[in-house]
Length: 535
Image 1 (cartoon, rainbow, N blue to C red):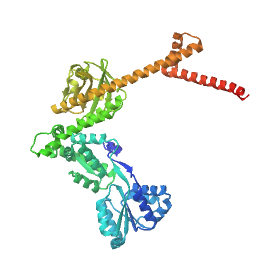
Image 2: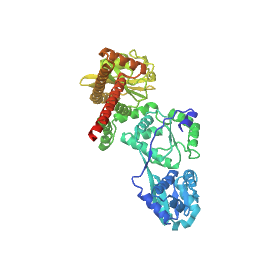
Image 3: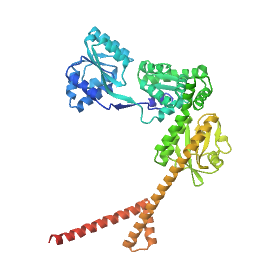
């Protein structure tokens, strides 16, 4: 899909929204296999190809694959679309009924009615479920059939990393996205679930209404509608190729229409986001106001819990970047840590392997250095590079972004770092956002300093161990080569340069050789002593 979007000239933002996980227990699936083999079902309905393969795998692990496939060939089988049909075809299982496009539960029921008619009243039916139960389908079949049994084989879960979903919520709310493509109902559920955790459901819903929303088909559309969002259209066929193709054709006109006044302007979207951070005063019940005010507390609880869970310097900084990017929408987030008289770039929202841990800024240099030197935040809404304090770093494309918010990280009354937020386009930071980021910087200051000191201590310990190894190796060379201390050290230096290895690696090689020699000497001594002991 991403490749196809690029082909049509779009810029894809891929947001993993769900993952397939096995059930904790296969009891129900095994009960189905046993009952199927015993001939207790007249009809089996498969809703996904993955479900077909999962059931066969479960039967295979129980040593009943051939029996279960043979039993499937003896009963009536229905499939909800081409994917389960393909999986059943691999097993040479004939399919009596196939639900036509758009392959929803309604088409499935209609196809069963057309295929079996009144005889459904005497059927014992098993339904393979996907991700979550389909209550509408189960209810429709229960009304028509003698017995309906659910057969769950896997479930949908949230992705392990929900940060992309959070960024998607912020992107939709901030107007940084033009078109949203939904390919499954579970994606909608999880997106709104994350928004609920952020206290931003209303803002997300408003943002989606102002964008072009495309749904893969009726099931996904129903889920969107339940969340108060009406998709702009569905593709003519519920397939991803048609989805992208028709979105490329229809979306530009719809985007232009919504930008011209059918939806909120960009400034209104930003205002909506700021309202999430600091709710505006309005008439509402007292309980509603209290619930709205909880959102910032949840954010503060999240950052403190994240920091408490971290166990390394870069892990702490990575969690800070994630959190700050969630609190204030931004296209870039840098964390600089003061080390000596330089601010060293130690963490970035965007990947910068070439400059992270390498780029250093002197105190007073550039806007970042000015913020650290004067201990004051700087907020520039546009043309940040025109500020007289600005300094360009050629390896940082973010330096060409329009807006900048730079805030010092404080600990015990002194600066320990700086956080920079940057925006590609003009962005007017509110006083509440500046204060909120400053509060975060106060909160994380002590933890940044602790993590930095622990990192320094670890490095010092490592250097001390390396020095001890070099000294031991040097002594071995003095003994074996009959040279002085200075000459032994120069010998190790030459080997280090010629072999392009560190002094520690050279020392460890010498020490390893000494250990091997001692082992050989000890083994030889044991062999010489063995005959004497036997005598």
